[in-house]
Length: 151
Image (cartoon, rainbow, N blue to C red; front, side, top):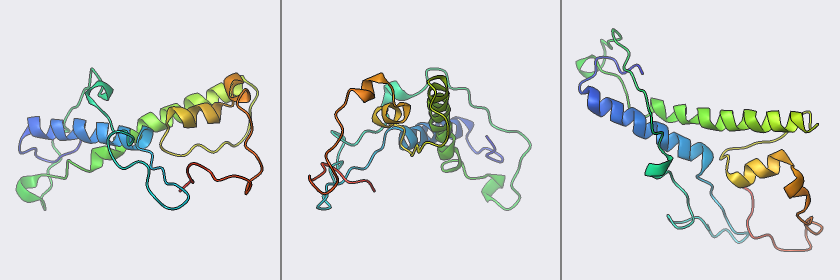
């Protein structure tokens, strides 16, 4: 990771690891659910999922790029907290490609919508597998009140 001249490598590496896990959670777990009347259902840790210690990679190899000073920064440093957040998107894109591969293997070709977060529910819906085919279809739109609405 390019952090310029690191002021404290241990802290910078910790920041990178933390931001990655935060991004991983953002793209794979953190789903906001809202009722039709506008009340947010995912308001706390009981039903709004964020990464825990078990979700962090066991082996996490972070290296700081050497020789990338920032003449304009404080002590030639660069931002380290926000840039690695987007590294967590690699988990989302890997899951999306796995879903695409599953779909191709099962004869489902063409475009499919796959939005973040890549929750287990989203993955199952996108795969359109045998289990999903057993779920009854919803009644016609407008004949029932949905539990949640899409944002």
